[in-house]
Length: 64
Length: 293
Length: 261
Image 1 (cartoon, chains in turn cyan, red, brown):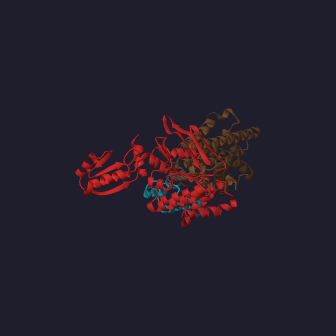
Image 2 (image 1 turned 120 degrees about the vertical axis):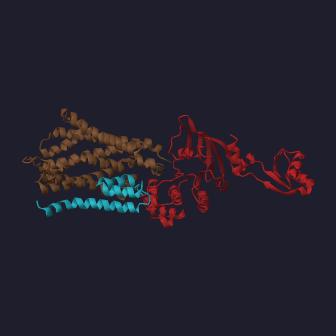
Image 3 (image 1 turned 60 degrees about the vertical axis):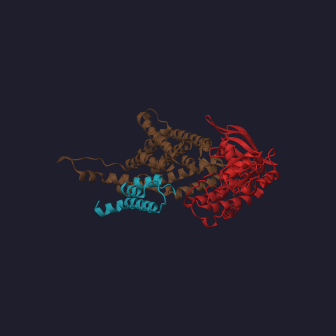
């Protein structure tokens, strides 16, 4: 399989991950009082793939 | 007719008695203030009445068709619901007819002053707004009995004034039992006073009864100097407490009447600077009861 | 309006506004896609990593499409379960601990409606996530490998759904019974792993067991399944789920007085 096809195949995966990350970052920015420092959650969301955003949503968000 | 009778209500946590054989009744459409220092068992007693806690022993007798509204000291809401959504859910769960829910919830929120915040998420609410919403969810189903745990202590003076007025207006067709440690509030709206200390009911009665029983009215006489005050109190046949240049004389059934004190004062002449009549405040009684045990 | 529908609406709002309805499906879809994609590129990946001596030929048997789909549920057995546990560990315990439950418990609340509304909403979202994930996996497997009989796939997904509902029931019952969300998560995760371990170690000695559901799901694709054993096992799971629900309702009522006032 050539490279463009590979990219097309992986595109949904990348889009979903990127979407989740951006969505979560926007939520973090709007969160008035997350459970822990914002910069730390920002790093976790950006650096830890998939698990980072989910950890923020479950633990860090405090469901404001 | 009494709406609710409590007999020997007791809650034991291991070896501690949080509430110790508490007995009282609530008359319909009266307001009862439950006062006492922190840790006296006010919240535990109210939680048992609200059905949140099971009493260890004792009985609570009341007509079960009576609706109850409860406002905890720190009401906590689902932060992702709006004030209107929460109040509507509370109304539905309390059995308000489906077609009346919207109107009743809206009206109640307007009544407590939350009209501008109907559709705001409760997670964004300040302490005062939460207290108002707490009151709204307690009264939205128009209960016969209202149990309020420190309903105004979290509010600023203006908010406190406003909520006390709301409560007074509710009192016309509701029976209210509320706890407070702010005695000015208790003095403002009380048909019955329950004084709780270490889980025990140490005083019960109307505000006037309790005041009469506890702190006799006193006459406070101010003199020019402390010596004058001392001389006066030494030559006086009654018990008096001297404090610097003033003395307090208790006016009791056995003690002097106003007339006799005035006569004595006239004799003292220009050494007297002023005379004032002191009535005991609830605060004095509180200190007296709390300190005496 | 019945209390059940009122509470179901509340659960729906909670799941939407706390984004559970978005991120749980995302986890299942991502792992559903990744399994076929990684398998497809595995030879190339190994090739580029290198490290093999000159002249050595690495023979990796190409997995069958059925094997890929079974491997996806293998991923779900840990990651998927973990996501569900994290999402729903606080369903009852969290409300009690934060004190938000107090204003529900003070009303003439039906604890059956209270617990079952939570269970139904959590189960629906878990099933939605599972099916989206498996369909994504099916589509990618179709693209990269070969077709799988769609009827077999449906049987496979339906059987695994029963397992997912069992897990949701365990998490919710644990959340109702234990004092906080952390303990509910630990107990749920422990029992999920223990169930897999027990069946892995000594599962060969029995053919009928609630623990066998993931194995049965895979069997639809492998083509070897004893229908009698299968249906007895499904019946057993249904009984276990019913018992968990009864326990959950009972524990919610019993622990109501522990809600923070």
